[in-house]
Length: 175
Image (cartoon, rainbow, N blue to C red):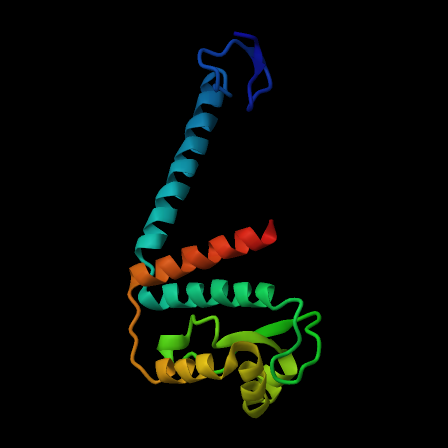
């Protein structure tokens, strides 16, 4: 094997393994062990953090990723309520609010909406209904209405599936 420089002391040494980055100087071994301990702790901490996530944590994460997908999908469209082109910051506006769990992650229920309509006009729902009808049609709007008034309780595996689905859609869209 060829000579390498120690990552800690910068001295030349002959590694025993191809991926060895530290020489066998006592100080360098201590640094190496400390770095490895920190790396192992970070891995374990990540696993523990995921194990401690609640249903609520997964719902929030799913909502963030889903909303990101909606904003990407509708980036070239106009606001569903006021028909102004979406530029700069805009929201993923829900026709039926997230209190209606059955349609929270339904793509027909959520559309790109300008900040003014979504936040300042509280969804601008009358104009939203006109816009959503144009986009998805009367039949899908009726189906959405029926779905919105049904009960839905998500499980963690379902939310993980939603998260993975929309992460993949985002990756495909970015390509």
